[in-house]
Length: 70
Image 1 (cartoon, rainbow, N blue to C red):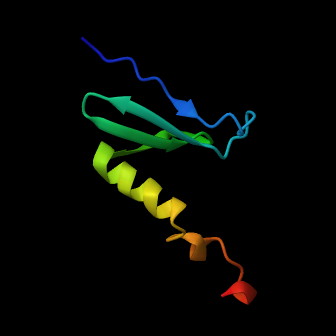
Image 2: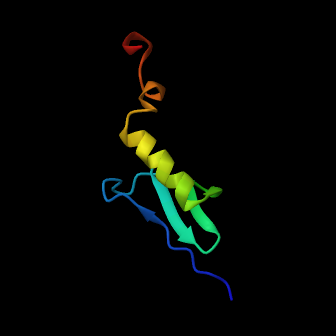
């Protein structure tokens, strides 16, 4: 039996094509960008949780800084 994938994205996206979508499957967590839904990244719930905690802790803020902010 094939598993139905239910993609979820933030309510703040408002139909934008640059939103991150997440889905849970029996094999792991799936991530994709709404603008390119054919490209899917698979990870484990544990790795996704660690990544999200890193985002909340500011570990990736340097990726969004302009050169003058560095």
